[in-house]
Length: 163
Ligand SMILES: CC(C)(COP(=O)(O)OP(=O)(O)OC[C@H]1O[C@@H](n2cnc3c(N)ncnc32)[C@H](O)[C@@H]1OP(=O)(O)O)[C@@H](O)C(=O)NCCC(=O)NCCS
Image 1 (spheres, protein in one colour):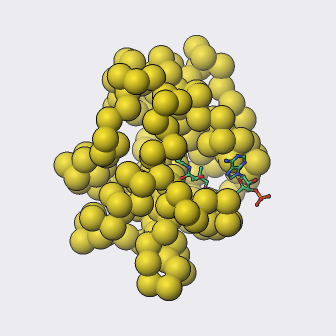
Image 2 (cartoon, rainbow, N blue to C red):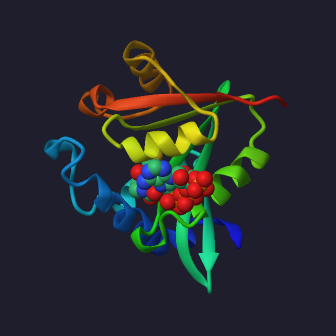
Image 3 (cartoon, rainbow, N blue to C red):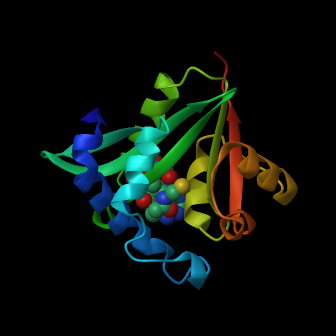
């Protein structure tokens, strides 16, 4: 049910991301919201930067995606999205647990919008601990390439895993 997606799957991955991201509308700052939320060239850049995307398929339809990016001394969880109509059914959990097994680093980080309470709760449920505002800004500057506006409005959570 979970397989690695490739650049050939761009349009179906984008479909999932842009459908799920509608949840951010009216929650994150208006000037950070745009529709579609992710453009094709942004996703191509993510693949080029070494992000590996995994997809959860149900009846041959891609319904959830989650990425992993190994960087220096950490692994980042990237782009976690489940189609709106499939949220709350265990798909995100399956993808995250799949990535936990695949991961070779003992230090996992994930970043999300500070107002996306559901996403923070989702990661906390799986043992991620929230960083302070100061640590968040340091980590985002070190490991992510995002705007200062996004940094101001984000939170980073971390999880240490025994290898
Ligand atoms: C966050 C997201 C990826 C989770 O995926 P999902 O498939 O809905 O999650 P699951 O159904 O596997 O839920 C796993 C656990 O997280 C918890 N959880 C999921 N959504 C939640 C929510 N909205 N509020 C509180 N807890 C939630 C559930 O309680 C569940 O625990 P359980 O198995 O004990 O019931 C998905 O809801 C989503 O795409 N949201 C919109 C985009 C987003 O915020 N992405 C995060 C980007 S970093």
